[in-house]
Image (cartoon, rainbow, N blue to C red):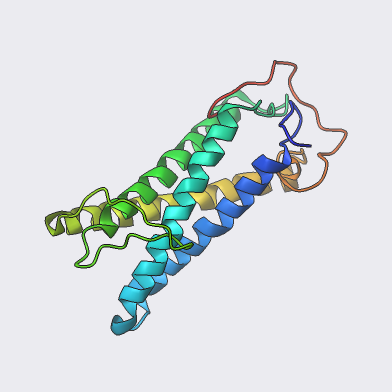
Length: 197
């Protein structure tokens, strides 16, 4: 299925979700490792690779958001309480804001090194937002803060998905996987919504 429906996500949405999820987890783990474990002489090479992957993740994020805006968003199960619906909406908005915040501050930070990091993983040139070393510490600090906040919200997101699957026993997790949502899944009768919900 190409496009989303009221009951499940289309395969492009699923593909963008899982590729983005893996890439962001790699960036978070690698970012911590390269700043705390990697030998200092190796760090600049790690920073370059980290920035290159970050540029591509940002491009995927834009593509994912455009696809989400242009497609229906599957409805939540009808039995969810109002606070659960609000938490789901707030969580998704928070994830998008933090993903964009972390990648954009990383992009700005990449231009403040002595040698700006201006290539993505494919070797394509990326214009720099900032090229003034005076802003290095500012962007580095915000990049760290937003990345840690993103990591924390991802843990909450995973816990929420597992709660839906294991405790509430609905199809919220399954319909984002590459298979059919359970036929017993109950959704509300409202028309599919568009946008970041």
